Amino acid sequence: MANSFPTMRLRRLRCSQVMRDLLQEHTVSVNDLIYPIFVEEELDDFAPIESMPGIFRIPERKLDMAIKEIAAAGIKAVMTFGVSHHKDDTGSDAWNPNGLLARMIKRAKDAAPELMVISDTCFCEYTSHGHCGVIHGNDVHNDHTIENLAKQAVVAAEAGADMIAPSSMMDGQVTAIRSALDGNGFGGLPIMAYSSKFASAFYGPFRVAAGCDLDGDRKAYQMNPMNGREALRESDSDEAEGADILMVKPAMPYLDVLTQIRQRSLLPLAAYQVSGEYAMIKFAAQAGAIDEHRVVRESLGAIKRAGADLILTYFAMDIARQGF
View 1 (cartoon, one colour):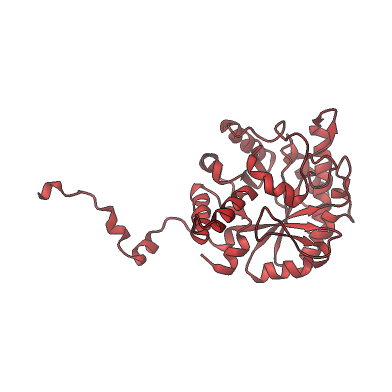
View 2 (tube, one colour; view 1 turned 30 degrees about the horizontal axis):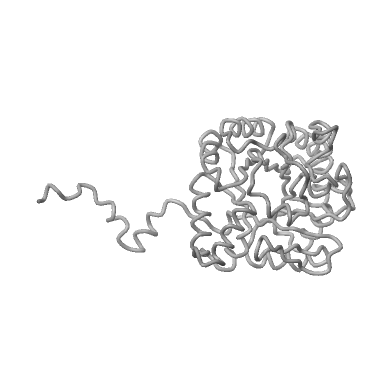
């Protein structure tokens, strides 16, 4: 009878809450989270985003109030996305020193100087066609776009951005931005590269929130969701070009990619829990199918366990208010 007993009793190490707390391998705190926000010019009041319950477009004129609330909740960093009313073929308002991108960064920094403001560096919110760069013929022209990304990054830096986060998925964008920042006296400003950004179906609610829907798709520059090795090449390339932090986007469907990059790079690694991931949890919770509080924390824990040091998530304010 004795020989039939288990030789290993792993449950001994789960026998009490104190034991489980002592042996927990990974933790997530508000210090790990970055809160993406949408700022719309010429808007009178906070506008709810129906596909992202609990998330609002922030009117530019009330950004000061919103930023102070975010900082007071304990959030350490925000990622800014502009909802522009001044779009054109090239997205030129994004490198206008008096444009929305520059104004919202400056206003955020003035409202809470201690809050890190990360500037999403792209053009999809500022172009009339919704693509992430300059269209030549039927394609986004890579080299023309990176010239404009460099200009946008310098304008963001001059407005007070603490970090530049290029998301256009143009070849050579990190090199172009690093060179422009260094050449304009911003050599100390870090770059968080969207190094493995997939052409994902999980972005749908974001495109509504940021006002950057488009005809066609971004498959010619964002990555094929079925490719893993290519994601490693993209990350290796951005690291070689001088990126200070790498990112995987989306997060949950690409935890395998996140883990593989973690194993090959010593750089800090971020993951973006995107709008579709947020919406699925919110709507499932509203339907009574899941416990939102537990699922949010489990999902963030999985992202951290897979290798992320930082997590961009629309749940950041909920976490800050409720804790883990």
